[in-house]
Length: 315
Image (tube, rainbow, N blue to C red; front, side, top):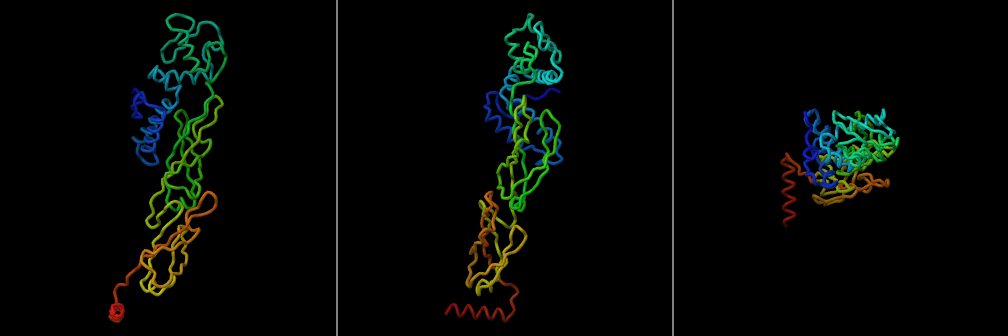
């Protein structure tokens, strides 16, 4: 079955800029990533197809060849890899040179094909092999950077986390690596794992892996930058007379907080240094927001006392 046009795969026109192609790839890769679509074979196949398309269109030299040769570019690329390992026929020679990738024959030094055109093509694909240079391998190029989505709970973002990430290069075998996500990461943040992206070529450096963090909303804690806010239930009597309440933390512990008499509903108390960790070793703050709890199931005596209190306040 013939492959779909790579531009159609990424949903971009043939005139798309490098930035447009990169943005389209990242959007689609995130949408169809296996981590976000578990047990979905169609999404997995789509993810691989997107990666194959970006491997070609995301690199200027490969994109030129693809635009020029279309589907034949894949055959040429396969022959290039084989030539880089075993040496192409005629490498280092000066006579006629014939190369037949997948049944398509090109001849150098003969008739029917423009030598300058073919020479330029060989220079890009083979790095000069077969044109009398004796050189093997393509030009030096750094590897591609990879984006990988990571979902965290707020507790994991607070304490830091470890994940096993599977990377599948377009032209390589899947590999699993362990990555550490630092404490304090925020939703939408990109964490760089140096040298864990695509392999370089011709001695070029490997690309980097970027973990794109998504932090799930918490049922109780709200985050604002490095600060946290948590509601704290306060009995009406404690709010009126003052006393002690227990404030939950993301560590799973509770901190004792003394509040004064006549504490109002919604009033906030700052617990310094109890918020999210920062990269410099400091931490944000935790705000305890009072939420008054009105007593229920009053006894007759309690109801009478409240009525007396209401009468005193009205007078």
